[in-house]
Length: 131
Image 1: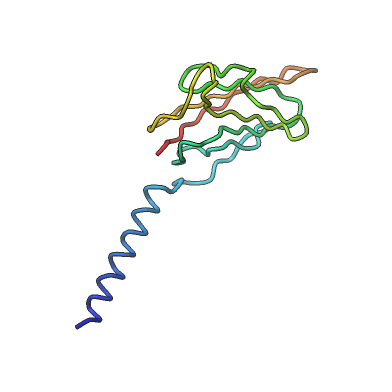
Image 2: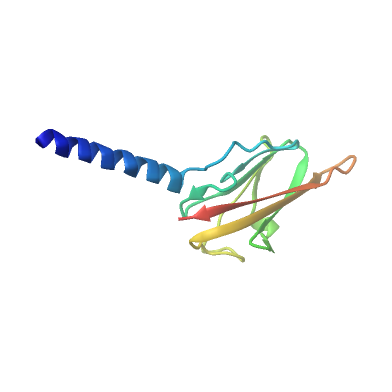
C-alpha cells in the first residue's frame, strides 16, 4: 500500500515540474536577430524578476535609443561599454523615468543607427514579463 502513495507523490511532482516549466519558461523557439543586433536581455516573452536589466548587444559602431513602455529612457542613464557594444539599463531610485519594475508585461523598443559613415538605421521590439 505505501508504494501507491510513493507513485502518487511522484506523479504530483512530475505535474508540478511541468507546470513550473510552462509558467517560467521562455517558451517558443529561439529568437534569431538580424545584424547589427546580436542579442537582447531579457529575451522576448521571458518571465524575469524585478531586478531585470535590459541589455542590448550590438555590433560595435552603433548608437542605441531604448524605449520602455512607450517612453524613451534618458541617454544619461544608459550604460555603454565601448569595447563590446553592449548597452545596459535598469530602473533605479535615481532614475528620471522608472524607479522599479512593476509586475506585469513590459514592452521594449530599441532604435539604432551608426555613429559615423553611412546611415544604417533599424529597430527591434519585444515584450517580457516581470514576476
